[in-house]
Length: 302
Length: 247
Image (cartoon, each protein chain N blue to C red):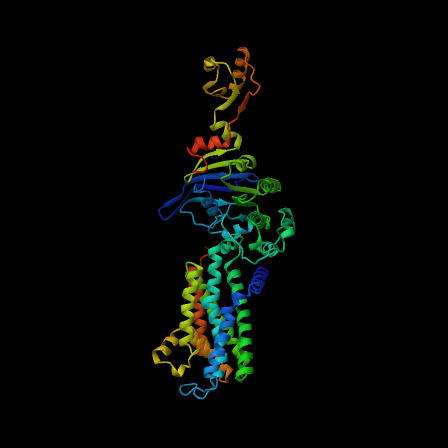
């Protein structure tokens, strides 16, 4: 079965600014695919090209086997879009927007169901301009799903949501995937990518710099774990000889040992052999954030 | 069709929720008619093709044209470019709203607003200033539909060309004033210097006005003027289809 989305050598320039230099990736049916990167990495431009909202300057794009430019009309019936920068008329009401958008693609779900699922039923008669940031965000996601799309594009979906609603939104997106919809998630939010995505492409300066499951990215690109404990012993130089240890740093009584995957077991055994049993011995696994830093040379805020 | 009607109905409700947006296209022409009625209301045209016609019999149908022109030069361009500026058009497009639905709904809403304007102007002119009833209402209605089509096309074209809603407003108001002054919708045509009359004839409102006045005062449909108005509308539509921007 061909992939739901195939992007080959996608390129897009705005005047003299290169938004997407060269990006290739595929999205398989039924997965939550994350495009992770900092602001300006080219994520939004890439998905807007996939949705036929922008003309790519180069490369081949296929979404559900369709060309997003020449077959935009058919494509838009089969995809859902939650755009990062968009609005509705100030005085339009929640139910009116859902009713209108669901009428565009006949045969979709009942919009009342989508409204209920995304917690908008209480606000059904509220006008758009009276909604809070989080409510607007949920409305846009609901509008993206109201035509029962085969693929849904969610661009910075949880921006403006408080932590509790964010977790609710993640659960709902998993449910959307479990119902068979492929999800393309654009995010600069590490935790969201790590917890929600089945597969991630890390984007930096208009290129895909890594791709894989969150676990694979972490194990493949962050080779070190950090073992931490407190010890009063003066001389710990023998730690350098423990198998797997790369570097030992001390801040007073706090000791940090960086090393390969098996270092925890070796360090623990060596400590016990030297008569030290620190009660606060713990290991810190590398996170996607470490991977991002390794891959791009900067953290998300830069 | 269902989408078109839903969109139109929502746009009508939006107007009703924010009636201040109607002031320009609806209330201003009525106000100007009252003022002009006070100045020229009891006079007749002196010279030219309409010599002897009571000024109010000219003004009432021509102000139906002015309402339509107000929609096309100011209300519609400002409305649509504000939609574009705020990302509303972007949102519509991404969800598969077609050009036909978007522009069709604007045409239907404009027909409604122009119709309400036409009725209030007619009632005011006939009841307060003693203007005559339309001699051939159906033919006037035909001219009203053709004129609305023409000015909606112009309005969408202006919205496509204007970079922002503010720009649309400034340019539209300028255009509206020029149209108001040279199209026989302010000082009577026979009192304008000839260059103004020529300028008026080069712009669409003059032709709309004549096509509305003629059947109103019993001269029947002026097919030549109607054809000019329709042609301007058709050209504006064709250009719009090339330059229309969703964002």
